Amino acid sequence: MQLQMLLSAGAIAVIVAWGLIAPASLGAVFDTALAAITKNFGWFYLWIVLALVLMSALLAFSRYGNLKLGTDDEEPEFSTTAWFAMLFAAGMGIGLVFWGVAEPMSHYGAPPPGITPGTPEAANAAMRYSFFHWGLHPWAIYAVVALAIGYFQFRRGGPALVSTATEALPWRPVQRLSLLFNVLAVIATAFGVAASLGMGALQINSGLARVFGLPVGTASQLGIIAITTALFLTSAVTGVERGIKWLSTFNLVVAALLALAVFVLGPTVAILDTLTTTLGNYVSEFVRMSLRTTPFRDSGWVGGWTVFYWAWWIAWSPFVGLFIARVSRGRTIREFIVGTVLAPTAAAFVWFSVFGGTALHLDIWQAAPIAEAVEADVSTALFAMFDQLPLGTVLSLVATVLVLVFFVTSGDSATLVLGMMSTGGHPNPSARVKVIWGLLVAGIAAALLMAGGIQAVQTATIVFALPFTLVIVLMAVALWRAVREDWHASQAEERRLRRRLREIAERER
Image 1 (tube, rainbow, N blue to C red):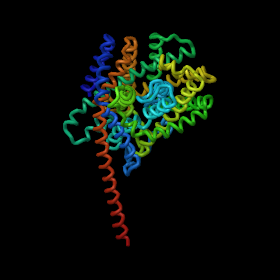
Image 2: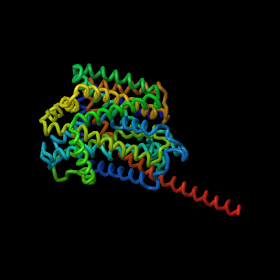
Image 3: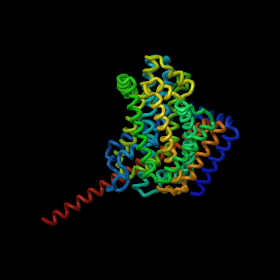
Image 4: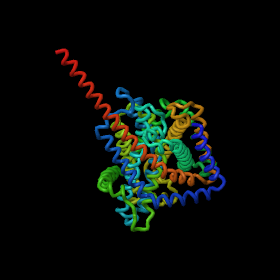
């Protein structure tokens, strides 16, 4: 374990130092790597992620769905509401707030190849691909990783580590790579969270500038990181049962109220029409979007959006997967898949219909300058839309608070997961360990923000996703083997019990 942490810390230190000393060089190297990966392995990402969607459906609705993450008589640790709130907050809550307006408007102005920008077809495609990028596919990635970790942890008694699943495979070379798999998970988590803290500071700064006139600049952003860090460390020290659970539930309520307010104050009928039409388009185009590349067209759209997203979700999967597994003990596989794939997908569809649908309606029918705002700075997209609605300032303030609390829950969850990874998979690492990791991640974010290297580290995180994709494939294979074995074992035990009961009944006659 010490070697694992030494290698992880060493790799993190090298990349951070590089980002501080020569951010342009770091960005150029990883941009080149990302472009090469996107061009040569885009098809691989598409096939793997679609396979994970199909695997999730098969596990949920097959005979294996009744198996539990834990013993057969174990009950869930958290209520369904608290559980959903925590996995949603850790998974992509902040992303939905950031991209709810920005992504549909971006696609509207620069749609997939073959569609003219600024047309009704572009608007339909914008909503359809927003549903696609935030729907079943990313949540299936998280679900399979989390299910593999949780299954081997709670049902087989292993530690809460990525390697726990891969070590169950009967292949010696794979078992010997456990250290590497865990190191990749730590690096991806640390950089992913640090980059998100930095990017989140930019959006919070934009919101506070819009509402209170706070200057936009590095000093403000560093102050935001400091305050956010203090908040999520305070929450982390209180433990999952209080800090994360309470904040996640609060966030879920505030997000629901914000969406309801926009639904009522905005073009209500247009939002319902958008949801209906886009859902139909999503279902009918599901397979085509899942496997779409552009071999006969010189376009980087699929690579810049779909493949980029798939790589980002994969890079985040060890962090989100470990956290979801931590709070899911006692759930059946069917409950787990429904809660981690179908329910968040439905919530994302409603969110994009409300915010993206409103923004498109205002831009198309009322000539609101939302597209121009998105093109100038995507972090201001949400606030530009609020400017066109009644109570816009109030909505901007609520959204800023929502972003802040989402970042607190993400930072809180990340310190928990990093603490688990660094203590051999202990489900409740000490407060000292979590504080150390929280300060390190915040320090990385602050340092790179000052040096201008946040974007480069985000790109680096995605580059690490390629080797981790192979790890996910191995985890999926191990999970399938274990589920089959346990199901057949449970069936054999049931047959043995029935036979025993028949023997007792015959003796009593």
